[in-house]
Length: 352
Image 1 (spheres, rainbow, N blue to C red):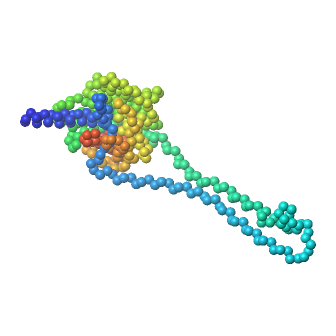
Image 2: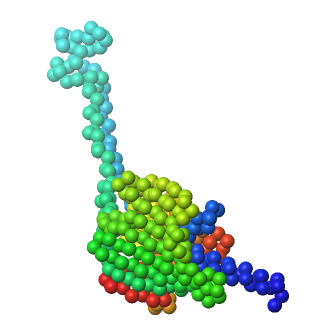
Image 3: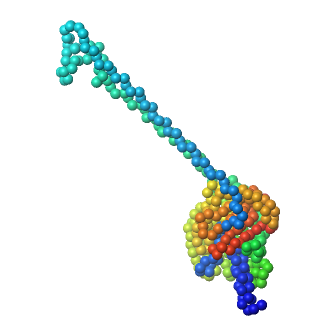
């Protein structure tokens, strides 16, 4: 093999190894200052996406009762002239103000003196009833989270396998811990022998998962990025392996790059937006309402909730179990260069 061909083969293999590192911390984004941080989950499906949910019908507009219109007052007819020659009495004498005859002796008012009809009472507008407030997110589903779960995924670049990811979930009381370890396989292992490890630990409460600490380790303990969630102070504190420190404001429901996948199925399905803190930034991750689909992976065929990230530059798709404990089944994303990466479930063991 000529020297130029060997260099091209080496470059391609190194590219696979680099993308395996990205997939091990999925979702991650390549940054210009060298800090690794998980990419946003966005996907572009190669197969036609599931059928769209039917559009939601808007509630009918409230009908406002129209005020009743009073009938027009009958116009009195002109009085006929008196045909007798009897002398004019005092009651029939001309009025001093107008010179017209005074009202008849029975005191009945003339048409000019008839009072205007009273206006009908105002009708109160009909106001549509407000819908009842939504239940707090996660209250109904968090009880279904597993006590323990062990998952294994194949990591694919295109159609070729470049690594594996082990995913561990543990819950004890109101505490949780998530750990993932990514390793290279095949030709990529010749150039990339280290591991990429992520952890997330925190509490489970009425709002679902509430992380306390997130770590990202690149191959060794001295290459460690840490995010601490100080909920009492309302701050997320970041310290990177390169000595960079950052601080972000915490809002209710904020997640890290591991916990948000377990939080996703606990949220109301109409509009899903998750505040998420990474090593470099804080942003909202928005997803479409889930659709129920059937999916076949090496671990078997099962029903899943299908989500697609919306409103972002890169594309991502997520498949989670349709029933408790709502564990990940498949994740697919494209980086900014258009390369496709997937994590596909190959083994699953869990204890309710």
